[in-house]
Image 1 (tube, rainbow over the protein chains, first blue to last red):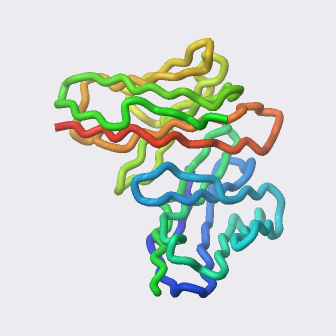
Image 2: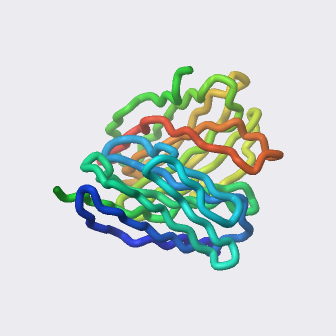
Length: 109
Length: 116
């Protein structure tokens, strides 16, 4: 079956660093995406990993280990506007994008 | 470049009715995927259309159907609506080139469907 696990919710303080983990078991693997979704809005693209390692993009970084079926999204210098749901999604072998349930991140002052 | 647009943005229907939702992809994108998002189930894949053909399908009943036109615009239809169909329906477009392993999906704002 297809399974993507992420924590349901996390809380962090403004200015801090937070790491959101994602583990997956899918039929094949063709890349992993992280999306950000603010309440009432559409998901927006944050990062893409297809090879092992770290991809850095400004305050956001994403890491992938294909052998462990594991990824994380790292958010640095947290801002209040980073309060949102963070979705991990995997392209499986059949070309379907399978989403996790999302992690609701609350950033407190 | 204009983003993905969806119409209508909000819709209220009653059980047993049918509904048609529309999605216009980003110009040049040939793939349109549809998702259902609910608080309990998260984002679930409905189907993907590419060049007017259904290329992929999720695990939804036959009441959920779709189509794509020659200009890549897509519609999805839900017949015999049930209360559980109340959800945010998102469409996403991408280039759809299976030869590329990177195929970012751009999401539209969604249609909020409420079934009473």
